[in-house]
Picture: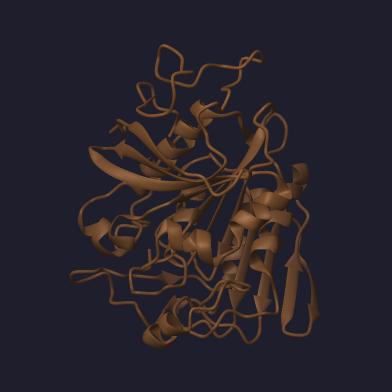
Length: 358
């Protein structure tokens, strides 16, 4: 069913055509983890906010180049709503004050983890600072009830309510492309835990994104025929929620009860082998520096499938902001300082745009 959407904006300034939907396979982490959980440009999706410099169809007036002008996209952080499939969805958008929207700009979609929010992800993972340095826009969408539906049995209330989070992210990307000159070849998705599950689901079911950055997560459900995509996966070897060796984690309840959570992913070695097969990649090379091991693969058309593991890290966003109260409440380790996951993911993204002609 096509998602119908409308968009409204509330700005809180902090300073000065979407991809094709693929067949969706049936079947993300709902347990309460502060660990960052995380469409085609639909005809009839029109803006419901902004200023008086909008075109007659509700979209921002195009610039002289014919691209969306971005005239109603404020600098800094802003809050927005989008109605998809009859549900009001919310997201935050960060545009660096120094970023001019006169040419095509990269977009990163950051998906929080279970029990997280877009605001929490914006504050905890350093993406706004990275955007200031790298010159790109970041969207921080909110999962309903602080969770995402990434498979038929995970996770939480979005699964029980039949929420289509793939449609939400498709509509979000389509809306942002209508409002500003987002570069389709440099549109990326990243997520942690439950949000990482949705990032992989988007890679399985759409061709929206040039690359995926997955942290402390796995693949939930079927993924029969994904389109080629560059993948960077970062994982702690002590993660008990999404075990490196695969299988159910400590928060798995078999997909039953009020908040279903079934996370029975493959070993990470098998998951990376799957994406190497999709991208027609050779065998990886590996090197270790202290607790950090990097397995890297250069693939045809400039794609890559990389895995970074941290020996002493658990279920966390390495380099993220510590939250001692939540860590104690949820039984989580503080973020590892052996790696800055945000900087690593942006470096990977910026090196792997969508290949020309694909």
